[in-house]
Length: 471
Length: 94
Image (cartoon, rainbow over the protein chains, first blue to last red):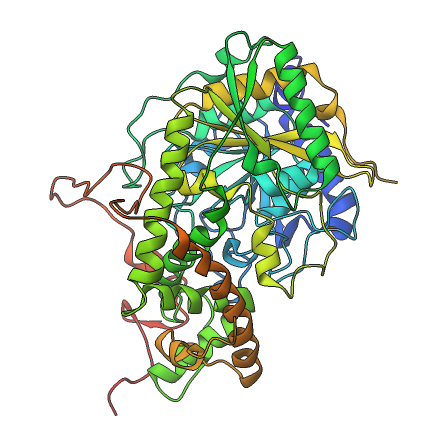
């Protein structure tokens, strides 16, 4: 179970990157069959560093199946992208390669990142390493499983409404969603373009900072990438929190939350205060509208983004009598049920006669949600909430009830709507032996403060040392 | 909320040939979801500007100069059918 700095220590004392890679490959070999973290044919046992040195030299990393890696199968776990091998590298992949990382495989996910359980993958559901009858969360479930089970030290995911933080919470690892625009989306297959952001899974906060350091920064290939300087994150990892003000929004502790989740997240407050922070209850009054707002905005953007999958340029084609018939058959066979539902809903909320009532209204409520945060951040440095209202649920429990599934993202969606950075880290173990996560939400481009608070908490508590055991 | 009655119409717009079972299922599931989002009607949005995007970025232009771009053969390499440098689709005009 090596961290990045342990890998670096081993390399400095004469170790070989190949031995390190092979030790992780053995772990993958041992656990992939039962946990299904990677997609079929998605483990690259001959992966090697493409640079002679770098801050991630020799570090194996797993990549979510919606991030383009040149020549490597990239399918968003959808039949409609069957056989797609991107002709170029995503910007994050280029940066990882230049930093010397070893790109070891592509991880399982909900189809097009539509889901919170990894059950909508066209291949198979991934399994939670703490309890194989439970979901790992989603949509970046495979990346969470790979890190939690020690198959890789770090992995990339993407987060549109909680798709990094919720699986991180359910699998007991650290999950970071950076500020919108902090990391280039070039080469990330788009779900909802105003919400999507690539981020990091790791076993501890330091490794999260190390990977963000490599992938963050302006990229001219992404017109929504921000021209904001990247801080030196490691410099902000310190063990005391004197002067830090933490807002705890009461709306995140109300109905629907598991009592043990509430208990452990409340304990975080006590630890933060012992470290010198001041925690106070605040109110984010529009919280209850986040899920409804999100499912209008996100499906609207998705319906537009998924129009490009039509059997012409890449992926699946089912033959038809004419062009229209080919489209109809290809898209019927290529998309799974959740993708179809979202394309239908998104098209509806954008259609003439309904646009004002749904889409325009949702974008105005979104502005109010953002305004709640802006006001809170005039007084507080970070906001603390549970990441998910419950620990991991059972496979099959919510798959036939889309609305219940959507509500499992109730605490993570607001950061995407407002474009803010947020991190989830383990803060307890439920009586059913399942991890519980706490979320910190920060000001735009203030990942350094998120890392500072998360690191101090992590170092003061034992949770980052707890991982699932395997026979 | 009851069933959503526009699935058939929307399915044609989005070019997906749904089965009868899917139409039935989606009508009831989307009815529930649209019922849930009704709660946005209670929010006072008077005078609020819509937030389409988290960052205050608008049209980001670059100089209109020719630059290297994706090689044509590479761009065609994933096509289900390609010929003479083009994507091939079924006949559009009979």
